Length: 224
Image (cartoon, rainbow, N blue to C red; front, side):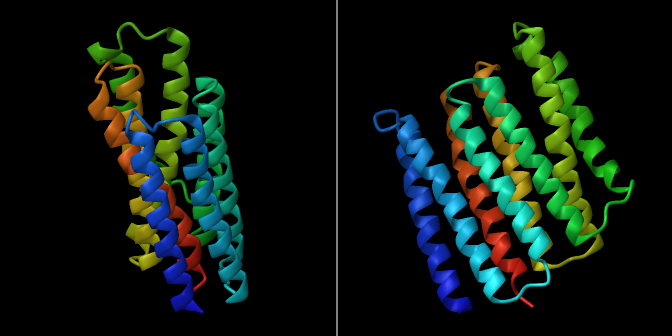
């Protein structure tokens, strides 16, 4: 069963990367392509959740909550193209579910906030004072700062968990979370910083792999 699960994940990753490439290329980029590619990582998460249940994982709560986070991420990804603030809100909710799922693996302690704060403070200062964002509306800056706080706490918890317990599962989660953060940073530079095509490519080239890695962690959690 585990081998078949890995094969299915490899196939899903291939389809996700193909969708990613098609969305990056301007000639084939569309909301439909983006929606399908986003749906693929949710389907991957659903498949892995089914395997985790079949394997009678003792981390079922983590798997279910993280899967919910993937659904919100998909919705955020799609809505971002329609209404940026609404899309960002759904992404933020996704990160909240990711954070909660990480807390089911290792109970939250206030020390976990240290990692998140160390990520958030420079992010906030960058958003507020970097010259490239000087023409950004105040409302958008507030949205970006709040979003930066939420994703920073999520990433910080993933790092904290790995520091406390050097397991493959925590390593996978941390890599996925960090890639997600990097992708959002590139999105910020692309949308508000005027960096342009390169930042957009880096955003998409890391975002979908990040989502797949998080979806794959559901399968990894199914291992006893």
